[in-house]
Image 1 (cartoon, one colour):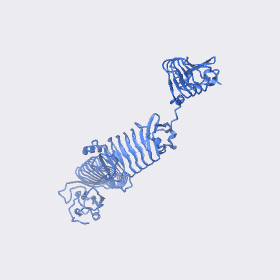
Image 2: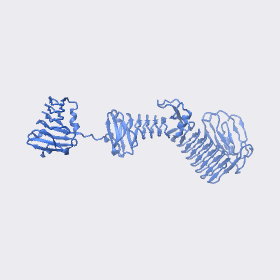
Image 3: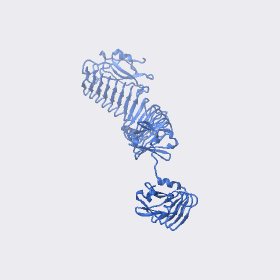
Image 4: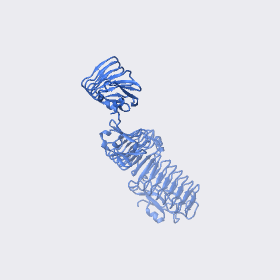
Length: 602
């Protein structure tokens, strides 16, 4: 490779800040181990190189001088070239260097502890527990499931093979997980965490940390506005960023002019040049391409914008806004009054508790409802063929009803959701998921309320009304259907032909329906005894303030007298001679036929 070649003296355990690109042949020539990785954030300065020792003890390591690396070049990430046979001592050939507390190349698994100064500790192929304590330590776990603790100082921890736990502790540490499902915890300081192959968990802790997942399904925890997450976009793994509550505090402290509360718009993928929803404003933070899922913690009302792939976006205790954009997304609002927008694709929308706004958009979407709702969700969706999914709700308790153009879904006395403008696009919902499959919403329609009194009175809602006064009135109808109301006084009401409604009011009134099937609306709470003279049609008395068990009747000659709770209320003239003209009495709780009042059950 081009550039001048320098041959500085590198002592065992020293730290070299090398500006340049490491020639892979050096590793082979020295017989050591190392790591080369793309370093897009390093610019023209390569990361720190940790040199444990020269295998031949010569102490000279050639490397190339600084040159701008070509795009995609491999930069130095870590170099370890063997350990001296002695277990402790100062740096050979470097009297000016800091003392080396211990050099320990453990042959078997177990627990090892360093010193308060700088140590070089290496585990075995078994599961090791190695604690470097203070000092700038270099610890390699080797094989097995290891736990490595850096302690104080700027430490370098490499897990190696196995499912390892690496804890940097205080200082700005470099944590390298290696193959396996590792957990890397940076602790205090500005740390760098590299997961490597496997499903890793990377938690930088306090400070502005850099986290690189590598291949596999990785989870990153961020709590500082200075945290950087990198992942491989082409990796098939499903990667997740968890935003801790401290992130909002960091934003509010660093960018109060953009977000005094720390609320942030997180954009999956590169946010530069993208057209974002109008509500996605304030402080905007792009997440690395290759991140699929975002989970919010705390209570800040953040916003998340997905990309064109399948995303899982989860809110927190605040009022969040989630946009899935393209892809088959899963949006979960959790607590708070959230707004969820699925966008194109077959999405799952779960508002959680709170009165949420759910809009699936194009595609066949699923809306999750449960009894945990603080208020009914509002669903807007007239596209696709959508479904309702119940959580913790017995489908047998579910009923739907129409309120205007909206359809309301309820479980018992609790309204779960309102589908806005359902009447204009009823085919956009397939129904509710049950153990037997998807059942149409019409299967859950509440049975129509049976109210015979209301049904009998309904035809007169728009009929002409003829009103009397509080005195004695003579009211006559015509050949049509009228509503005659006498009010107070001893009145005469004559409906004429047609189906009429006669309401005498207070006083002892004379009521003549005439031809047609007439209704007589009476009340037990109004004084007087009314007389009904109507031998034409099939007529009824309506008593909405009376129950059927209070009625009693008897014939006096051909007249039928009817009482309520022992007090005479009305008399039907000539009923004995014309029994078919009076059908009976409709009360608040049922119908009492005239034959039951007269004692004849023919």
